[in-house]
Image (tube, rainbow, N blue to C red; front, side):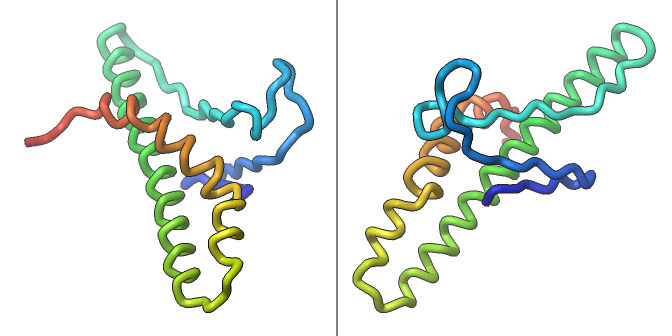
Length: 121
């Protein structure tokens, strides 16, 4: 998955580059991080703080939605792989970027985001 389309129509495209400005690339420890938001902080300080808190909640939900989509894609791919009778399927799956890089990284980084969301009992 090299592109992500947001609900508001914005499309983010990811591609590998040989070196970024700090000397890392996607295969050597760099994970793309997107900070995309609308700033609507008009009015008094209290309404600004409330608006900021609401926006942070929305961003947490968006991050969880992205993780959910990636995990579903991995699950669907594994289900399809079970239906194929080929000996090289395990090697192909383990060498794919989805399973070797993206899935481990998003699972590692989503913990603090998920912990920040208040639980409803």
